[in-house]
Length: 77
Image (cartoon, rainbow, N blue to C red; front, side, top):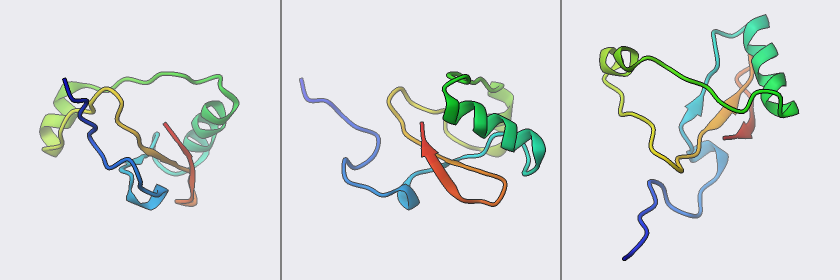
């Protein structure tokens, strides 16, 4: 059985969907810092948020680019 990947295997950070934790500011900076240190290893969101934004649900194995308050790509998850 073939393995299907949701994204091409060769892509740069700019090609990944963005993971924005909270609004830009102190809370986002705190969350990004926790991600980078390894203290934050999971997250959750409400289904209704995806439905209202008409966005697809994340898939297992999907990668995203974490951005900080200055909109810089700082990490992948």
